[in-house]
Length: 124
Length: 124
DNA sequence: CTTGACATACGAATTAATTAGTACTATACA
DNA sequence: TGTATAGTACTAATTAATTCGTATGTCAAG
Image (cartoon, each protein chain N blue to C red):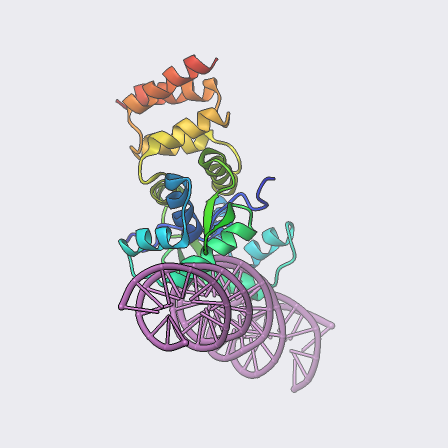
């Protein structure tokens, strides 16, 4: 089942990235990973992961006392959804002006482009 | 002067797009444009534009009784900032995986790519 | 058995974003 | 002249996102 909002909030995304890295994660796992970056309460992480579960981004099962969470969808699918939403909102749905911006602001270089061209060759 | 947050909230962006289109706009102009899409109060638009001004996205001058707003920065600059912020947040700062997603989810086609390659040729 | 460590459940405070109401002012014009 | 109109100023309500505290339960070690 597709999540209703294609977009994760910044904090939700931060947590999802960590869960995707791990495939399986407890609240404690994520809590400890987040702690390395910034001060945060254990229950905050718990709340966020519960929210992600009710929104359909995470699935949980109980293992002993704790819940073990895992992603409900592959990372690529969710990221593509976020990208699409961004393009809709910022570029009115067309990806081409995005590319123009990337090139003009020098956020991509020629060698990246070449890599992509090769990818397209493989796909078609 | 660079705005502190490179990123506009969704509602702020919606208004900025309309101001960029017009170069000059009063609250009423934007209010009427927004009304065509959805119900909204005049004062809501006024508040948002005041916020955009204090955040440094809009400049205003008084003309007769009303303020006339205009963009403080070119659209391309602000959009590039948003794009950079998005890439940082979602793709950890590197644009290449973004391109991969665009290609794999078929959001760009080959002809778009060719256009870009030509652009790069022109730039260098 | 009691206690400490660690987990969830539940409720709620805080902060950010969005929306809008009311009071007041200046101006055009009947 | 007074009244409707169109504007700002100021305040605040609402909704969404983020953060965390307290209560409670379970289990393992002493």
